[in-house]
View 1 (cartoon, rainbow, N blue to C red):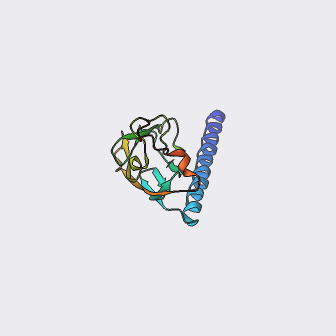
View 2 (view 1 turned 60 degrees about the vertical axis):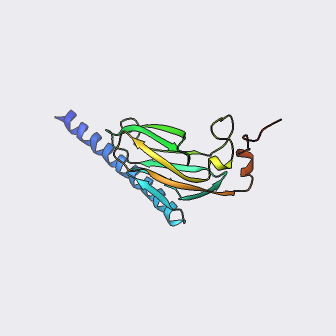
View 3 (view 1 turned 120 degrees about the vertical axis):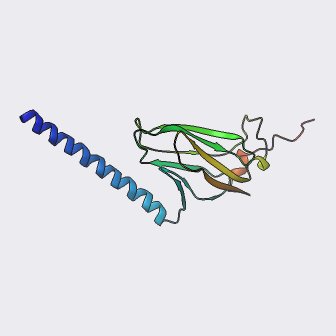
Length: 156
């Protein structure tokens, strides 16, 4: 009887801890919303801001992935070329955040700004969430030119 009571108390503490963690994580997301960031959301996945300048990081946040949700996030350029992908498994991790920054380093299928400017699409495989789209405009952040060197030019 005493072991059963102890197990119930431990389970209650675990549930309370998870609830507190979820609360504080949601407060951080709300804080970023309040600070002027626009979040594009599909299910538990969000991308910060719709419009970006070349050289900017793209932040992807996942919060509240269900234990039975498992799949791949695939990010496509405006020319429908897969740029990057991320695996997710809610039974392992229910939340994460990652970022990427488009560049031309070592890539034969993307060699100039024209390969990045336009509407990008993030698709979710393995879950029923609709795609998220965001845009890169033909404008660099300060110092961003170093990430996208025109490799398309003929070097003769």
